[in-house]
Length: 606
Ligand SMILES: O=C(O)[C@H](O)[C@@H](O)[C@H](O)[C@H](O)COP(=O)(O)O
Ligand code: SF4
Image (cartoon, rainbow, N blue to C red):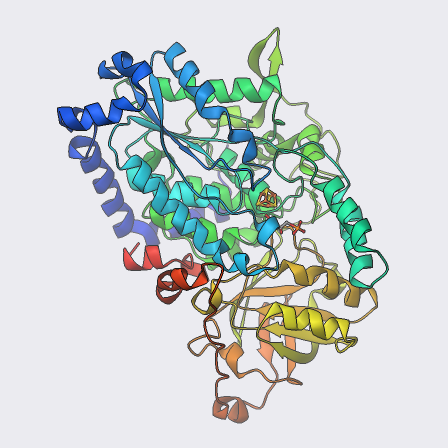
């Protein structure tokens, strides 16, 4: 397969931009393998402490020829997606012994459910929970007791955080182990309809709660194609899962066997054997470009415009929004999964799922098919479908045709000839917009601004009928250094109602939206952020603003001399409560969204 010229050119740009950092990273993980903290170097007391917690396996663990796997788990009952991990370590320890290795829980990491905190103060810890997870992963693996790692995480910031931490131990072979989506409940579009009725006072709270519970009804990942499920698609394209593991439902034989295979595959790629596959070699510039390509081809979450650069930097790789913009102009949109359509991930999986996407993009030369995957079947395996036949895990070729061309299509018959992402630039800064879920007649919005400093005030203004007009809602001081860059997804229903009423509306913010946000045009991640002097701090009510996703511009149409002379609005005081005050260190040190919005990376000069 010949690689598409633009994919090759963007990859070369990433390689060039990463040269020094990547060389330093590869040297670090070489040194860590040769003389880092690991079991052979630990003293007897240290080892005794390390074995005591799993004394039932002490004899096997003392046999240092056996690989010991460190399990890092994000289990909790707050995320429906992660509640499925409850018994995983127990099972994995048994499967490890069967594979001639051992496994221990190296540590747990925190995980926030953005669905629970959406619209509430906890959401201001959401982005920084990613870096907290990275730190917790490093604490777990710093015990030096492991020759491999298994990372149990699925949702939004958890996969990025786990990878950011584990990549600093990139000398270890590492697999990502997903848990799968819950089965389909109330369709996402129906859920959104009831929300809009409630926002208009046409549905009761009881009716809304019933609809929400019918949508989010059991263990497993939510079924919309948001940040969590975008993670799974990207992990497949990076070859960090067992092939095709993304969307098998929890509690099924297939899910169990995929997890067993992950443990057994780790045993096969350990560093003593001749098939050593360290994480830091798997995650290279090509794997990162693969992740960006599948994100764009599937209309994935805009949060990955922040998380993927952060993951990349943790491996010495520099990826920026220009790379995304260029890839988006080349990579076609070949899936329609909510919010970019009405199907959910279970229907996407049944129609062909990630294997279909990977096979089709590979055939079109849009993916690097020579990356080092954790599977020894090679990258082509990620274009095949796992199944249980005669009680055994097998991989089958997919049918040539899509199982449903309203959900997933081949590259030569896409839903749209390009991905759904654009950079916007202008006198309001550098911003991102995802238009794959926005009607084409709303890609250019020009209207008077209404300016807010928090999302609750927007909801109050909506309820008071103050927004019933063409309007560009500006919500500023939502950047990482202001209040932790929360998602403003609770604004989707009121803005959607205004749009349904026929008004021309758009959102402009230095904050984020959810991967589940869709139909309203939103210019997000606007940088430099308002706090500290970004241009959004100059906007005033009534300014005419133009969001133009066709030309790629974001402008306040204000006389330049007046604009120049304007003062910056004062940032609100930093909030207290819900633990926000102890995250000040992460706010104060955060770099720009395009670099990952991370104090961790900024301070470590990554
Ligand atoms: O980026 C994402 O995918 C979102 O953060 C998602 O994880 C979050 O849970 C949303 O809030 C869910 O959508 P609803 O709030 O509409 O249920
Ligand atoms: S997808 Fe979002 S709402 Fe669903 S479990 Fe994960 S974090 Fe929570």
